[in-house]
Image 1 (tube, rainbow, N blue to C red):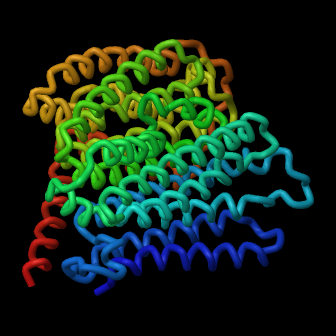
Image 2: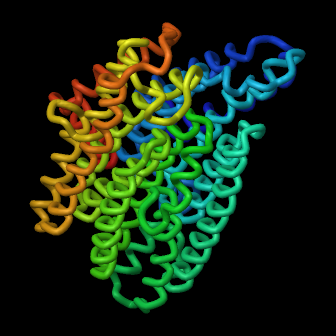
Image 3: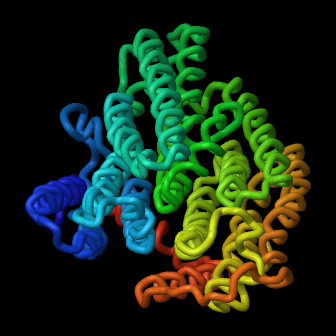
Length: 484
């Protein structure tokens, strides 16, 4: 049996070994490093099913910082699957990285582009297990520093450099909010561990005003991470300028980790009534802004950026209603449908651009890619029998049960907006005349991955039980180990 912390250690060691090997690889093809990274992450993913029983957390020491509960284990697997799929996209994106490089060294930078996501994955896995504000900050910064490099990786592209600078400045600002908020919370409670803070709050012997101020600062930092309004200002420009696989990683992996931290923090501070009202307002504004700002977009990456903000709003409805299972299911559905869209975008942009009009007539150039984009778009819109529809259903059902009627009304209206801007992409693909007649090449590995995502979109849309069973099994396992 494998102790849970060994997973992150294995991922870090694999990344370091590949990084050292790449430095001595000379002019060999760097795609081998992407395949090696995928192999290592698949091995770690398999290892997550052979974890040693989780012991009850001790009063102090390492386990006061680190949790191996069902939520943590599930999102470790989530981070690993996301990184594996992003690495497959990175292989398709390799020609864009090599474009403009001298012929003498066409592989410059490719190795690092394939290896850096491994370190991001390690940070995401640590974030899933972080139950202390110290570890939350450290793991969050590990993820953010990796993204600093990845976002601005194509440094010859001015848009990528601009995206990197914006992400760097605003990430540093959000880190300052987080540290300052932690300081205020520590000043009131004398603790940084979430469980111990909860014990202090249960005693009622604390000053609420500075505690609420500190919590508000922490929520600002987490709002930046999940792209909630009014902290979403960085999203459109960064998503548009970053390399497409990195945009996909930001949209899915970073958002999921942010929601894991948000769920843990809110579970600790759920006794504060002001918190629920604040989150209702943020969720409503996020839904309205994300969906309405997406309506006039003509650039597909910017459209998906505003779509990411909108989906953060739907997820916040689940957070407000404390529907943890609905939030987790929605994140899994979001992973499948969003990465499917970005996988198609990564392949198509090698011969076209990011504008929606560049996808005109895609069905004639590549019927498979057109069908894959169709499935991704209708799932994001919430068409029945897709994962996106069932995810929204679970979220709205939880909101109705908690009598959050305002959020349900706003959610239903904004879903209608989503149908417009998602289906205008489908219209371009199937109804407009193609701008080029050249076929689009697609690797066998990418075809397999897209096929898997298409099947998963439909399977999760009609049979969500595998995800729900996985959560139940992990919870039962944790209960058994805690009773020993």
